[in-house]
Length: 305
Image (cartoon, rainbow, N blue to C red; front, side, top):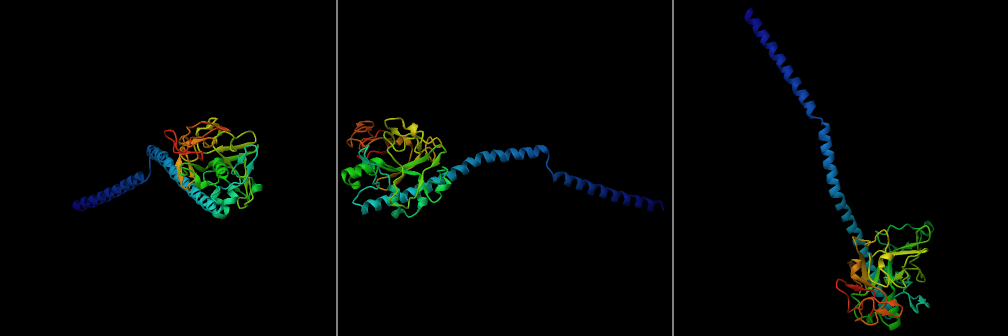
């Protein structure tokens, strides 16, 4: 009888021990399924650090994509320029004549070239966030300007093709064109070959892109080299160093497109001779470097001579 009682007691004890072990395992499992406050804070800190590292990388990737799209737009404009001059006796577009300057300004280029471009969206850079007046919804914002020296020189001397160094002569450059007290962009119908509102400039003196109290165009090239007035005055406040990663895309007179920092571009009027250095006095101001006399670090000039 005593032996039976002992065995029964041992059996009960084993059952109790198994129950205790099972409860302990459940509690242990429940405990490890959650996180302590310290663990949560560590995870949050790691996520914040990764975000701080990766977000600029993502933004850089997006900016590179926008810059590439802009360059693609400009490439189409460059090809349009080549086709236009081939069909128009090597004359650059822009038929507006300014009696005050005594030269063709280049305005009207966008409408005149539209037949070769065939897409209004090509005229706008994806990085140009300027507001568009709702009343001009059927018009297109133009993010690029023509080098006035190219049109003036072409029409004065007979041929765009006669340029000595089209591969270093700026044809088009990036701008922001804000107008009026409400900073509303000047937009116009680029499909109209008779329009004469599109922007032109030469990087400085006597420049259609100079901002003032009513005309608030600004360069998105970054500060240019040379010019009669420091070109930083003309720079768009949104992109003081250039629209794309401290620089901008430039279309050259041979149709190719290149990304350049502003300091690599000599601005100003046409030089008197191709050998003239930067800022040599010209009939209406100071000239950009002649095409065969670029300063160290420069790879482009607004001079068509």
